[in-house]
Image (cartoon, rainbow over all chains, first blue to last red):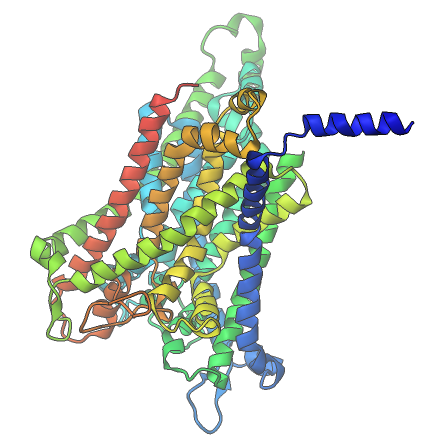
Length: 310
Length: 303
């Protein structure tokens, strides 16, 4: 018995291949694993650091009715600063809403054209164009809103200010559309060709194939694309900072100037003292933005995953 | 009327001839095709017009001198050199961090990770990292790098913020190009007695390197245009001197555009257009290189 054990140990030693390469392999595996989880570390890190800075306000000065019920954003009032975010939320919501009103139909239409109707070289060119449009930096979009759209809106609609919900909405719509188009196109491409072939074999025209077969099959992916577009519009900073007019205001029409949550942080953070209440309030807006985008992204992911599992 | 059309279409003799229904379907088909084409063009054309306007209004100021001289007279004259140099600093340092980290993460996800809940959480984290608003990244950079780690408002803090923000771009594109390498390549290598790492190093990476490069170029273009994350972490509105090291502040092209178009009085009209043109030129040039490289590689593919 003992003899058998020792011989098996000898065999083990004989076949033990644990040389330098083996240990190096393990080392690499460890490094690569740590890098792999870095994304988790960073997301958690972002949440922790932003929360730590903003926590002071949330624990002490925070009043739900003031923050979400008041439209008075007067953080620099020395005696009685007020932090009503209603107008800021309305600003973000109105601009994002208008942007989506523009971007959703057009990006879905463009995605359908590129994925289903266009062929060969046309498709390649359109895809490249869309990709290039998606690359234009947000500060350039803001500048376009400020210097090109602004006079254009004043002239066309005969209004005193051109920096408004309309301006920022169009800018943000044009900005989000290329990204939504690419994602929606991917979703359409993910529908197996045999679906299309089966429908065509039954005598369906191309439009019937799209309308009755491809769109229902790609429904979740398209919804995911829309959600990601909403998330992107919601979190956009430089473009809305420059194109909205930046005045605290609950908009009554698309020609009113507004101010967005993101833009408020960008405009005011530089002027606040580290650790002051105003500073903490800006960080708590950050927490709010983080949580909302987190929920939007999570939902989009769950919806898209839904189709993959089917 | 409708019913008769249908009956006609269903009857045997009209099966191979053009029926009224066929014509109607053809028409609808044409209508939708044109409609969607119009939508696509309406999305693209305004932007092309806008870009054309930028070129018309700012093009006259662009020259080699504009790129390589300092802004003078309260930034109302002169060029963009310090901002251009600052952007090169920020982007290079950000790449130095995010490229190795992103490639390693992608290697883990493509070569090691199995398809379980843990990997799903990593993927979710990557999607979220890409979706977090840029201004929240700025808050994080300020809280973490500027204050907690004590780097101050510096090139280092700004670059690290940019690196984390653009990390998903590298991870996703690298993972895609790694996964495009056929599994048989790896198996062949394992059969020769190679370790996992040797296989990755000698077989997988060489076959994916060009795809990775495409992603890196794309990341450079993303990083170049970002403004919000560097506003409070290391980029300054104006500096009379060039940065001497990674703990100095710097000017940056993207922030410079914001500053000359909103913060500086009496700027000649063409100046911000010219700055915008330089910025967008850099970004689109790098994107085009990335796209061209990708197309070329697709043509070259051996498997």
